[in-house]
Image 1 (tube, rainbow, N blue to C red):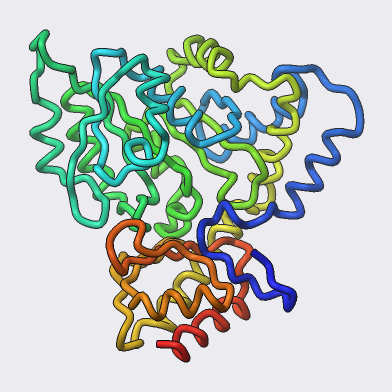
Image 2: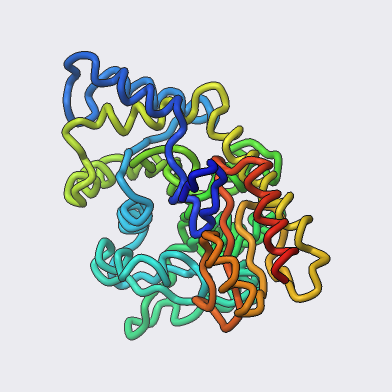
Length: 349
């Protein structure tokens, strides 16, 4: 993803970016001596305390290697096989996890809801929470799963989240937040982690770090202490209780230190905004996604996409609909990278 002239041309995913130097240094430091295995080390305890401080509450944290594991294990603790998970039709748990949530939950059904810009429509949710209630022939609505940032780059406002969580809570549902790009949403809204999670009634957060500077570490964050024992066993049974947990803890600890996670997200969001502004007036380009995060969807002519690919710029095209491209900006992108990409689009359009 890096050319010989050091300009970053990779926009396929923020997973394509490398790791922050501070996180790499933390992993090296964690290898300097022996430590207790399976998360019983001092560094893991330090990370958990830091997470509690950032979220302003007591909580349970389970480091995992992937966001899919975080989603699957977390959802499994919130529902039973005859329960259903209400999620947007564009959600990651529906389209990009090869049935992992169904696997971890022993078959809980994902019930899909619509809504513009990949945000769940409140009226559809009001209907869905009541569907088949008490009927032994029907799955029982059990969990609302909200993706923040959404898969198309939109960001739920606090008021939008509050409306959805209130509907779910009033109907007796648990609430899960898929926060693969949690930091990007946080800085876009300029709110605290607490305000975007447990203060709205969120029970479980899939806390993403890998897309925003970490190597191989995300986390399940639970705000309900009654789930701690079940999560501990599911964490182990799901193959996520690593023997050298301190290396995942080191990543998360460094990620949360000195606002690295927020600074990285601000950089990614700002560079995406710069790209959006630079191509907004290009006649053959139509930007279709909402502003606010580090993901941009647009419509490009095939000729433009092909010419940009020939120049080494990497981004998805025609994967969703004909002509639709997805461009994901990472914390590693700098002004020079964005300006070169904009210049190429304007030249070739």
